Image 1 (cartoon, rainbow over the protein chains, first blue to last red):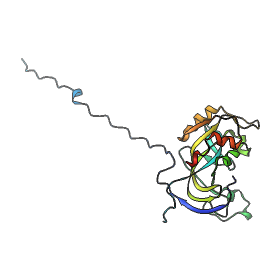
Image 2 (cartoon, each protein chain N blue to C red; image 1 turned 180 degrees about the horizontal axis):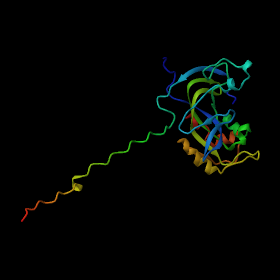
Image 3 (tube, rainbow over the protein chains, first blue to last red; image 1 turned 60 degrees about the vertical axis):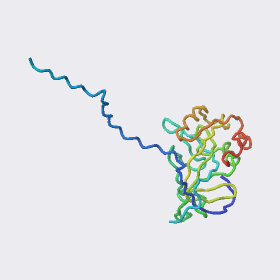
Image 4 (cartoon, chains in turn blue, green; image 1 turned 180 degrees about the vertical axis):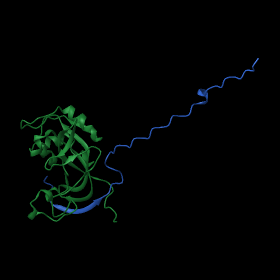
Length: 49
Length: 180
């Protein structure tokens, strides 16, 4: 490509990454603890006859 | 370690070949055999040194070197880059289209009167001409190419012009989008 004559040399260090990188995959979340409503209900103790 | 001179990438214009790679399409430099991978910057290496005869080979250097022509090129004006939409190179045997766009440049950079040479680059915007220049070459459907190039995760637009004349391409680009 014809770009003319050189003028100056410098260093460019972008603050923000110019490359839209692939985001690292998020670790699989551990299943949420059951909500109180979903907690198993203990069977009612009944006195033996 | 010295402080950088600039903290924003330089933005210039380039033309790329579009080549089929496996299931998708990828950008490739027009003049040299350099493949631009999605989501990865292209890092310059001195291909001139690698391709020259041993007795004419220049000393190893970090590209772009002032005394060499190596580095990743970009033009200041879209018309300059658009002139490569019409050309023909060895790489056209493999390509299915030519596209134009803006490119971010950073790292070691040499500024020229009409463009830059830099050590690092990544596409910023890709414009896909609606038709391919003549020469009887293979062509893939424009929409298919445009869709595939979204792999680069940058804006991709189809240019609604049948012309490949640099000044008309520049007009279709809205003349000066990269300069804003």
